[in-house]
Image (cartoon, rainbow, N blue to C red; front, side, top):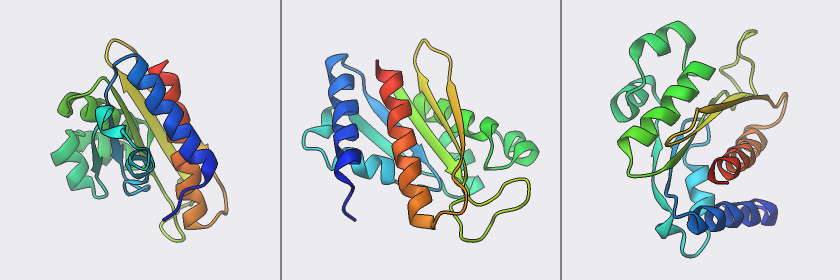
Length: 164
């Protein structure tokens, strides 16, 4: 899948800024299915910054791979601020890195509810020694592809702020 030039430029900037500060990055993705890691690895030399990525699509994988508490998933659901924060925290704890980003949401076209409609996506980023940052986006009635690509852009911008 070819990425838009703007996304590639943003990924290049994130990697360059992380490299300048000798920061290593990990990703924890659900609805984006690894696209954040994919756009980062489109950039030559990314292996000195990107350490690893998790695609934790099921609740079980979020628990097993990232240590997201079962209570968090039961109380708030997979698409929630609490889960996004737990994913970012877990990725940082389980990976050999300094910065993490997580994405969890409803990309559609089905699966939405009145409370959690299609296009609702939660993001979190963690950096050792800092508070976890969270963002919520409601992309609205976009296609699945558009929601996923918009989510990649938000995640990269969140990463960029974390590596600065």
